[in-house]
Length: 330
Ligand code: 3HC
View 1 (cartoon, rainbow, N blue to C red):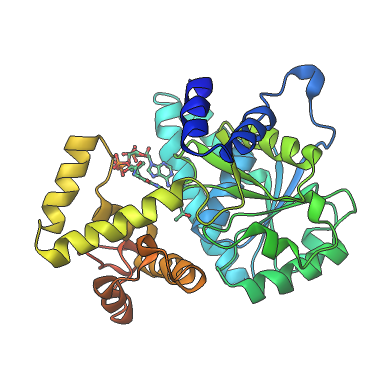
View 2 (view 1 turned 180 degrees about the vertical axis):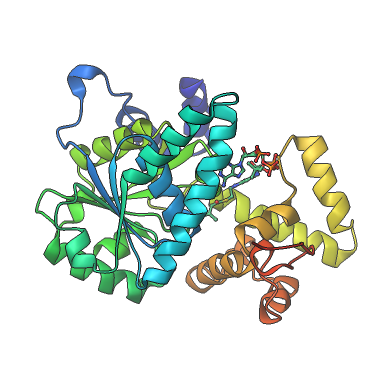
């Protein structure tokens, strides 16, 4: 299949030839004798929000020693409550008739997670630091500067950014070769995919270690270059924006578009349900950022309906209302 895809791409644009070949060769399915040299055991996750908490949970479930960092104890406690709830949901299925096994699994997983409000302390023994804080380049730079000076020399860094360039984030550090992207999907405990992003500076050893780490979490890694939105968001966000434009043009209702994409394309959620699930503020942030950087790209045009909902504080599920209204947000 890959060979065929490459043949077609070569006909379209011969310049792509080498890129596709590079991607094919370096998204290595590692065999035992090619195992990465960098061993990851201690993982520090910075940001205890939905994504950071989800990544921490999955890492702890798979036997990594995890430290979650956030600015306030209160956020960390909230994060642990969300993790506990999610683990309870998972154990219901994993141990349907076994209360003891279920309790043990939850207890052992939670026992693998520490929390800390001090970044420098939390990264002191880390083999891998994953950043999952708000999508602001200045904040990320400030954070990675501090992390860079406190983490062991061999420690690898990754960002879970949805839309900012990994290369630019890595510029705050002195170890660009040890820097890559690990992009997870919401809800992290359920979504099998991890996009592993390599910049021009990411070393093979770093890439292989991040790729293997994703596999060790029970996920399926795919490789992507450091391009806007990587694979999934690059396709998903313009798709959601076009759905909004369809409603604005009067082509169909949001409800019917959602039904159509679920039953006609087999998607688990339609574009409006998904936008509410991802968060309309997040979706707006992504599209506005891309539009600013690439104003000539029609696919990245901001949308009035989305802008108004966000201005009105309607962020989707998390705020109780977006394109749809929701019951309790707890
Ligand atoms: N933790 C543990 N289990 C969970 C969970 C969580 N956070 N969320 C859902 N589940 C599990 C539960 O086991 C639940 O079973 P339960 O009834 O025993 O609790 C099961 O999933 C089904 O969940 P629901 O009945 O609540 O609803 P669904 O059947 O619709 O499944 C879904 C929920 C998995 C979210 C599914 O609708 C889905 O796959 N939606 C698409 C999500 C998606 O596309 N995510 C990617 C967004 S893009 C992104 O994240 C990138 C970022 O950069 C913006």
